[in-house]
Image (cartoon, rainbow, N blue to C red; front, top):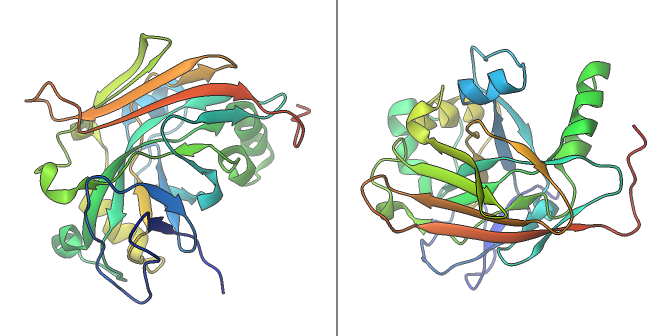
Length: 251
């Protein structure tokens, strides 16, 4: 049975049940098999800017690996879709586990990455009002740009990482992972209590405030860095392009 997941380019498929993930700085992420988990509303200021309730336990949904796109490529926006950017820290799992204790969670982390969760906001709002899933609003091809893998040792404290995103040179999002409502060990423990996490699975950990619309022709530049250093550990440079043909949102 096919599941969702990821391959580290140049390293071949990550075998089940639990091959260790190699942390090569220059590895690129590509999609096949296993799971991508996206944590929702993990920054209180972001939940409030969208008039959403702040969760009392971690809330998540799944994204297809076919939504992956590399830096330097286009985010393709279907006709009628209002696309929003959401910059995030991604956790890449290095081994599989189920019912992982918070105290053991760090040992399951194989590395990190910078990600942008693109959302079809008008589709999402329509689905929410109807009590329907958000899968289509989150799952278009190119709606999950992810940077090359950041070796785990490069980020000594994942709860003190700066995230930022610019559109056409204008700063839209700027935040620090210290403001997460739920810590990474809490997220790993919660998600693994529901589903088994495999080596190579990806978890996006939430976005700070400042999300907004992106349109055809705009340039996106996102970065991840440690507060004490001027250099970025990861960057994403993308452009926005209207998609010709295919799905069209009717409102």
